[in-house]
Amino acid sequence: MVRRQVTVIAAAGGSPSALAAKAATTTIPIVFSVSEDPVRLGLVASLARPGGNVTGVNIFSGELVAKRLDLLRELVPGATRIAVLVNPANFANTATTVKDVESAARVMGLQIQIFNASTSREIDTVFASLVVEKLDALFVGNDAFLNSRRMQLALLATRHAVPAVYASRDYVDAGGLTSYGTNFSDTYRQFGAHVGQILKGAKPADLPVVQASKFELVINTIAAKMLGLTVPPTLLARADEVIE
Picture (spheres, one colour):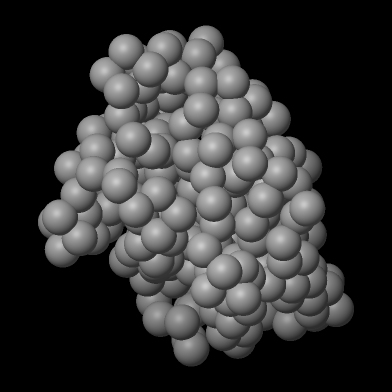
């Protein structure tokens, strides 16, 4: 893309694509969407004043780890041993997720076990291990690759009767149990607006990083019934959308 001298690079694949774009050019404008703190990642100098050639959207997925874990505990009150699935190839995001979930689990008195998968075959292997070790539930980390395998994950979770919580409603639409996270339709409208402004002549250094402000809880009661779970009425009342 740098050799072709594109007008703007839209790095929508999380921190790996954003960091790769930043490493490739200091002149072509870059718009990112990341779930981690873009300042900590070194993408921008600050949220209000990005500086340089990079700006974008912080989708706040990583910051919601504790809320997702608490949601899983509410859905499966007897769960004490939780599997956490992450993609080791997405190093920055995975490191943050593992740190946050370990911290939240300690507060909640939960035991967690980390599982890595960066291929479809490895996902199959993880679920085979979950069954053998009889873990109570599954926490799926936010990751573009895992999201691309949402059909596989939802199917395996149902087949092996593993209650799971996800970062995006994409999983729930594919048959998964529940999700809590950023409203991606709204977020990517903001992402597109930044790209549009740059195409009209704005400079990334002058465009503050947008922080996601809309979050949604989605529950699939069909999946709950297949898993033998009764969703608490109080949780249904809090849901932004219930799939029946």
